[in-house]
Figure 1 (cartoon, rainbow, N blue to C red):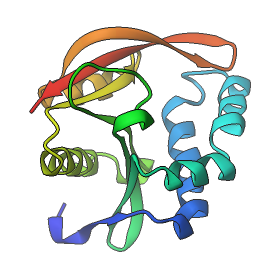
Figure 2 (cartoon, rainbow, N blue to C red; figure 1 turned 90 degrees about the horizontal axis):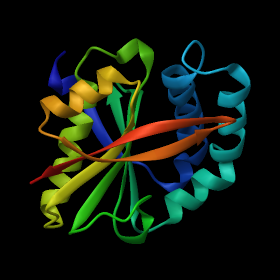
Figure 3 (cartoon, one colour; figure 1 turned 30 degrees about the horizontal axis):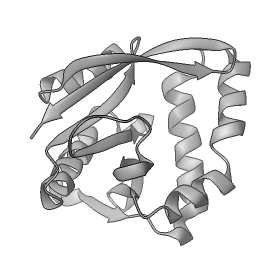
Figure 4 (cartoon, rainbow, N blue to C red; figure 1 turned 180 degrees about the horizontal axis):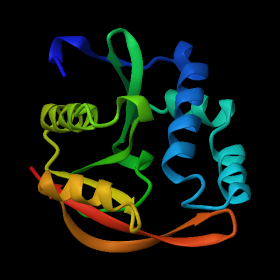
Length: 175
C-alpha cells in the first residue's frame, strides 16, 4: 500500500447516508453469518444503524467520524467519542475508539492501522491520556491488532445482539 493513496477526511452531516451505508455493510461483514444468526444481525442493524441514529451521532459534538479513502474510494471509517458520548464510564481523561471498520476488499492493506493512528493523533491533540475500546471476545483478529498496538485488557462487559448476549473485552492504552 502506498500511503499517498490514502486520505483521511472528517465526516460531516451531509455524509450521513454514505456513513449509514458503510456502517451497515462493515458491521454486517464483521458480525453477520456465520458468526451470528441472520435475524440477530438484521434486528441489530435495523435498531441501531438507522439514518436518524447516524444523524444524531454526527450532531453530537463529543463524537467524531472520519472516512479513510483509498484511491479516492471510501475504504473504511473511524468513530471516536469523548465526554458523555462514550459508551462506558472509564476512569481518567479518556477517548473511546467506538468503531474502526474497513470494507472487506480493503482489509489487509493496513488501513485499520492508519485509522488507529488518527485516533492517537486526535487524543494527543486533546491532551487525552487513555484510549479505550470494547472488542467482541470472539474477534481474535481485532484483539491481536489492539494488543500489537499496546492495548491491555481491563474489564469485560455484555453486548446484546438480538437475542444473543455476548462478551466484549474492554481494552485500554495509556498514552
